[in-house]
Amino acid sequence: MTSRPNDQIGDWLAELEGIELEVRCRLEPLTDARFNWRPGAGRWSVGECLDHLALTTSLMLANVRPALDRARAKGKLGDVGPSPYGLIGGWFVRMMETPGKRPMPAPKNFVPSSGLPKGAVLGKFAGAMQEFRETLEAARGVAIDRVRARSSAQGGGWIRLNLAAWFAASLAHCRRHLGQARQVAELEGFPGDPIP
Image (cartoon, one colour):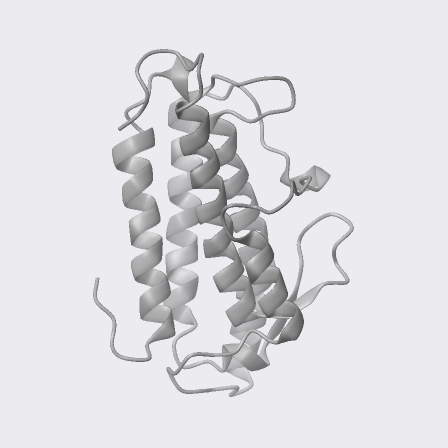
């Protein structure tokens, strides 16, 4: 997918496509045992990383989509140029980037399930990414820097960012945990050969 100059949403859609491609090519071929192998107590498997991304993306979109729909109904329209994230939003996006400078404990409602069948996790992940894609498409023409939504993290409802920040932070969050999944597959003790 190619984007037009200054097409922030098009760039995000292209990045989302790259994330999905990496999961299909590098992680989907893993056996169930490799997919669910945990490197140690309190450390996530490849499957848990993907389940976490599916869960957090779906919960984020549950707050973002209604805000987006209300904004469109109220005529909060804007151009396709890059939308600023705001001061707090910019900080939040940077905090999500890979590699994480410090561990970020997951809020209770963001903790992934363990030992789920690979197919169930991949289906959940694919569904969340499809919903993300549809929401990004629906955001075209809306002034996403002037529309805010609350965090879906348990205990984090006081955090309100604009939609541009939520979209960018969610993609950064995907990059972060795909990087974590790759690290798990490269650790000594990972069953079988490391992933390509």
